[in-house]
Image (cartoon, rainbow, N blue to C red; front, side, top):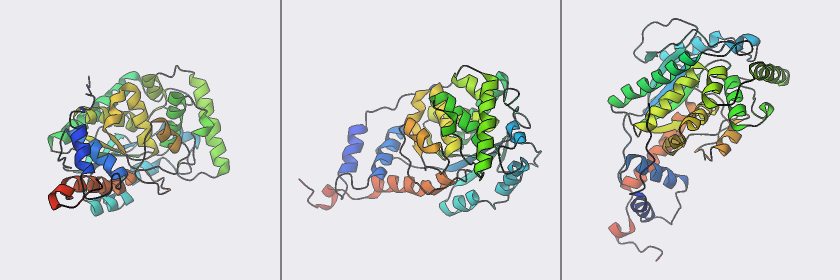
Length: 343
């Protein structure tokens, strides 16, 4: 059982005073000031630190891919995992550039991988069930995925990591995310379904039709765990368990795009306190993401019209998080250099 403590506000006024006393007009560093305040509260410190930052890519295959809801074949999932492990993907480039470690989790990819130091073997199954015809996973599988996600974060925490970026890989996972979003927020599916990896208009209409049929076929109560079991992915469920555990351990959650934010939606339905530990990296170009961020009252750091996934937005946003901590810890105050402030 995960227990997430509400953030202590004991240092809030002192943190705000420290931010306001820097040699700048009040509020002039905008969102960086809010990020600095949040991280100070998460760590309950006036001098917070970022240690061993890591991007975790949770990968899994979806049975619904067999219905043609993506322009790419399911095999792309395992091929991209291999690309991650050999260092050739965009996320590898951004992680190297910004000093981030990378771990790839096989939550349920339809492939057997050779051991690799950056691969975490946590396979629940080869792929989820095709929820057009059956639930995506059993209750036991879903709980196992949650537990394994928590174990992954606990191990990372033991190594000294205190900030984790959450990324994803899985052909057709935007289909899963769209249904989760629609059912848990209560908005029409048409407003949640996007082009994913690049569907044309005909493909988008087909995807929407199939997903609407799947929802009708299952006819479930929109309870968070029931929705996750019925329409989720192994990687999404594992991400939820990881997010819960990260918040419990006072780890900063750097949330990537549509899939990761959908996992955060599910996680927040299980425990609302998790949102206090989250920083949202970017607003992706996937149709439902802005609505999802609005629902969570989340203000992303970046908007670059990206829709790549992989944790790419989190890796690009990380230097901004570093900047927030750096100005808080290193920037002079009016008092320290005897500069007159606005008073």
